[in-house]
Image 1: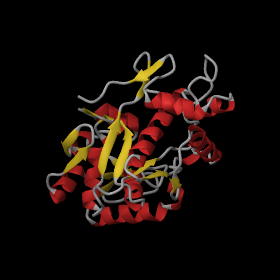
Image 2: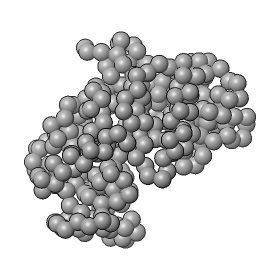
Image 3: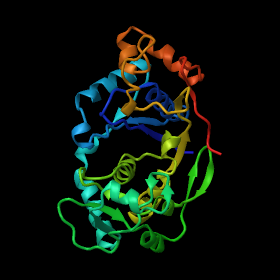
Image 4: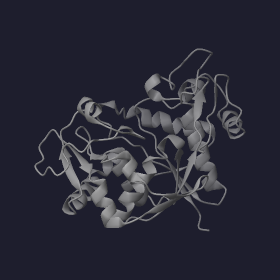
Length: 288
């Protein structure tokens, strides 16, 4: 087996928390165990939410944990690649512009998928674009072009690709040059990632990424979707709920807060490897 290339790809829209530490450690250790390479990629195209100064904190956090890595270009340096990929899909007749709001989609959706209400196809077939539109992938037409697809998860085994469950997803956002689906797929191929290691909350997204790889003639990696760290009530640790900020009980769950409070990073990393978590969090259930 070739030496694996894994990556940790945080967005600088909030401080890292213990869930990020666990994800980084899993990716780092999977590469290190086979003499591979662990990459750091900053996913910084989230508009005004991106805070460039946080990227330096992320590096300090990883070094504090005792991890070593090779850094690859941030997403903001790859906008031309995303545009080229989107243009290629448009030329295939697989992207269409959409001006629907989230409220309109929720009101008309008749099914719910892994990302929420499934887009009901209101704008499907639309040709004219504009400045205030997103661009969606016509998944039915895309699958007609590729035929059946499969992908492999190191923990869950072989999977039939089912991007249709999410409906016609957005690939080019109104407020950003690419959605997570398009950017992450392009980036992983450009960085030579052979084992895409991330949390189980992104398991369903992989169906879409597999389709994009087939359409854009990109290399096929393997995936490793690890369980998530969750709070006692079952909710995953999340930046949007302040999991990376200082909380009750000392430094809380934020890495920067724990680091500046004087905690030993390598000791914390070893505890996470052994699944010894601070009170109030635990490892969530695995996939069925």
